Image 1: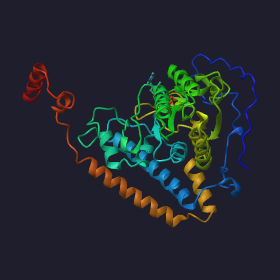
Image 2: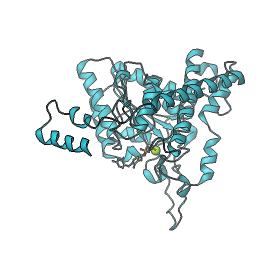
Image 3: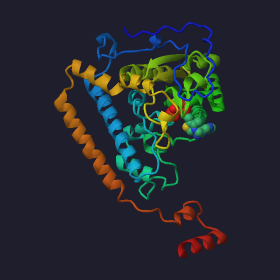
Image 4: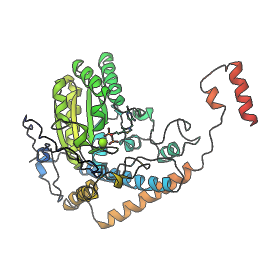
Length: 386
Ligand SMILES: Cc1ncc(C[n+]2csc(CCOP(=O)(O)OP(=O)(O)O)c2C)c(N)n1
Ligand SMILES: [Mg+2]
């Protein structure tokens, strides 16, 4: 049965002092008891039917979306290595956490993403080719190449542009939820963050304001155990990330972030809780960042590869596939068909995105000023002459 007990209120186990010169680090905090995580599907793919309240159609949607996100990630990293895009932040290993949680919100709810929720923009309707144009930074991009890659925006899908400043998404989400409450809008805000963000100033500001205002917000922390090269064991002395919510009088849950059905269920319940006027809830989705922080770093320089291998065995996509196969909803033929269809979809999107050209330089001025000043007109003339 899917159960979760509150962890014991115990003092965190003392941490061993890091040896000088020891460069490879391990992530897990010594005192976190992960046997307490909310889990629906066991690693072998079995689940108690009584714990699963989801249509077959919805289960297949979750699976296909996870597979698409994984393939998109793989291809974008390849484009980056080929010099066709500048930068990419992969989510390999975190597909269940991103997709399971975002899928549990209603379309009218807002997603305030952090670093690993880019797939949510596409789930909410951002065409793949426009997402790729954003990574290229060409004139097909909605921001005309003025934002760093992976910072998608999709207002029509209630997907807020990600703020790069770690933790600031939390106070943005809290503010949006407070505004929704004041206006009487029937929306819940999903406020995302990483484990590292829970050490940032905005974590306190956002959590406190949202809780005091009883704002309709679900805060979701993807605890992927790393903040670039800082492991969660060195990030915080709290027993878990989730218990930080206690300080704000906010209920919380710790969830197996590699179990898409557990993530979906926990988020759905938290969204209902917030929508009913009970205020915010905090979810810690325990998962793992299997690749580098981004295409710009080499994680083998700072972490123990054995840990990565260990998490490969807990792969969220494979676990859910085993579950679907066990339920008679999936098989090898369907898998091959899906992989082909997604490969075609991504190929077509890359081709379409690469048809874009450079952004007209005059847009830098005309997009900001209705009547550009004399100096700006002069600067533009000079720039166009060069
Ligand atoms: C205020 C601030 N400090 C530092 C950085 C540099 N930085 C970018 S991502 C990151 C780590 C974020 O870790 P976490 O919150 O765990 O998210 P993850 O990347 O693991 O998803 C840091 C320190 C930043 N963007 N903003
Ligand atoms: Mg992290």
